[in-house]
Image (tube, rainbow, N blue to C red; front, side):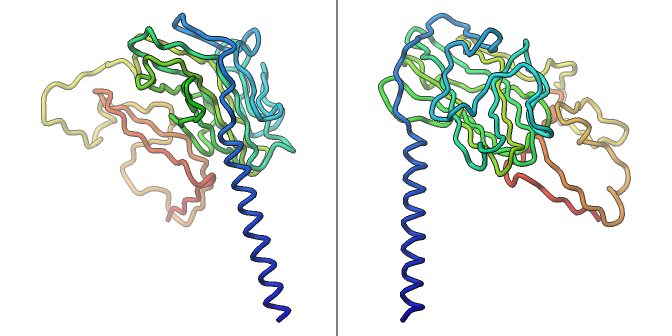
Length: 284
């Protein structure tokens, strides 16, 4: 009887703990819409945090988002410098800001009622063995809910990347965006953002076409060279080889960034590891 009673108590404790934790998470995940103290209606809009936070404000996260002009204080995580100018924003994940701590930074309002097109661009940096999750969310002024438009989880490499997010679904609305971050399992979870833009004209992406193929079928087997293919971003991870890969039993602990390789016609092949935070490859 004592064992049954003890088991019942443990089960009830686990239930209420999980329920309370999930309830708290849900309440944090959907904080009230804070309204429009500042509204931007002239575009393109740019913010690089050079002279301050601009009209961006930290919400909920108790000073986890910070502005910095040098490398982050912790080793093996975060950028060493801003992408553009001198300053950037980052999540300071040192104790007590991990694990799974929420950090939100909100934009001013953007008036898209007179626009025909809108794209949100920013640079992000996610370097560290236990990097958490960084999301971009949007909310319209007539609603209190937030929608995730873009998200990355885990180590992405010690590089700044650019993201382009289509806001065409919000033409005719006044919106806010926010960066919603959750830190990882240790202090190596410093995530950063810089060079934010909202543009209302078509954007150009990718690289220029140094070679254009117009005769088909097109074939490339990489027998004599890379052909007209180029590695982009991935720091010599894509390699051309004529024999087998590494011989013997070798264990490599890889923190994989996003790998992008462009064809001559700019068709992007993307290989991305979002989960888990640490990938283990055994090559034989």
